[in-house]
Image (cartoon, rainbow, N blue to C red; front, side, top):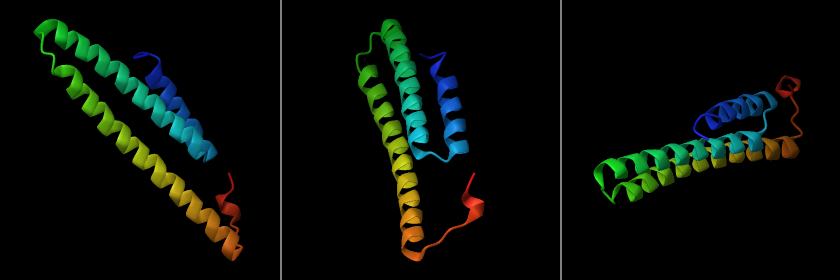
Length: 101
């Protein structure tokens, strides 16, 4: 997971941007969270093995939660921007050929 998922996340991000697809970009964000989960789990296990400090696991969990909230906020804001553009287009009949890929 630590080796393959960063590459997969980068590829999903590139495809999502090229297609202008927020769902693919959101999936890329989930994949990045998966990478963070894998790295933090491995780091937590190694640190626990070396130090015996039981508090390391909850700290890693809080870091992951903060990152997941940040990614979720970013994805949500992207969806709202697209929803506002779609509403504007429907209400005002706006169409711009330059927005088409």
